[in-house]
Amino acid sequence: MEGAETVDVIQQAVESFTRDGYYVARALMSADEVEALVSLIDKSLSPALAPVEFEADVHYPGAPVSKTAPGGQTPRRLLHAYGRDARFRHVGCHPTVVAMLKALMDAESIRLSQNHHNCVMTKHPGFSSVTSWHQDIRYWRFDRRELVSTWLALGPENRDNGGLLVIPGSHTLDFEPGQFDASLFLRTDLEQNQALLAKAIPVELDAGDMLFFHSRTLHAAGQNESSVVKRSLVFTYRAEDNQPIPETRSATYEDIPVSSH
Image (cartoon, rainbow, N blue to C red; front, side, top):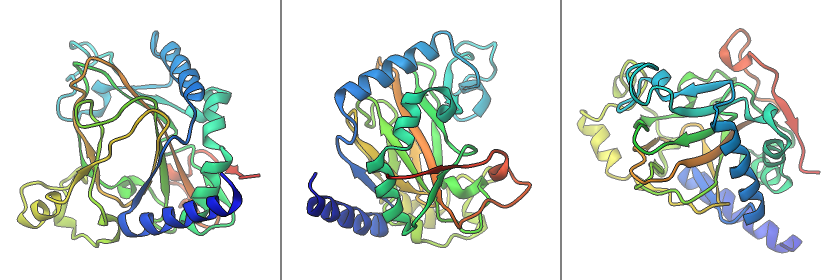
């Protein structure tokens, strides 16, 4: 894109993100880049190269009860993506991605978290679990609850294969503790939450599309009912001055400074 066009696109993204808590950049990665990432991921899935989180580890609805149960060795996340391969780092530090993130966070400098997301998300047919409604910030500890994650689709994502659902504008809401359960998932039995859930919409993505979403945006995902593995590359970023709180999980590994230059 030309300079003026880029400015217009970023301004539209900021307006959409501020209002809805998410924004989709279409065809941000080329077909060749997607193909290379899919090939790399598939080689890392069979066999599953550590560190890996399995479906049995998350204890979500529909997950195998143990690693010895049928489907218990189904990978859910390939962890530490940034350090795995230069192709992942290319996405994490992509100039267009970084420029967009700086605008969305109104920050001159940003860092990629090595402690949150930083993974390849997969959903396998037959043994994928349900991700209930939640905000990512629930277990994150930073000076401000203002982080942004990127979700790169490496194939089509929709309701049929466990694509994300979001509630537009939910990043601006203040919730009472009782609206969430003990695991900090949104309770679906409360009338006030049901009215909110009625506003949920699917985020339909094609290969190469990238979703930018706020750490307080409520989102969920169903099981993969298709016959194809769904793969997504997910990173989380913070502004330079939004520091992780010492001695929390958010400060376990040093965050990576990224630049759009």
